[in-house]
Image (cartoon, rainbow, N blue to C red):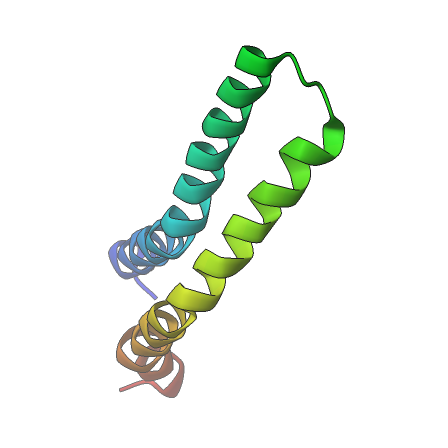
Length: 88
């Protein structure tokens, strides 16, 4: 396998990973900032207040974007990795 093909496939795989992780990470960031702001404003320092809403928001976003994540991975495997493995 040539180095250029290997590095291009690696670059595509990393970009796919970023695209798949972006919705979950952005919701975790937004929820964390909002909850941190709420805690700072109200002086409520409960540990479960930071954990439970953030995990709930991430589960909802994961459930909503699951079809996007699956189709993106399947397209990447079908168009890039399977032909390389099969030698086409």
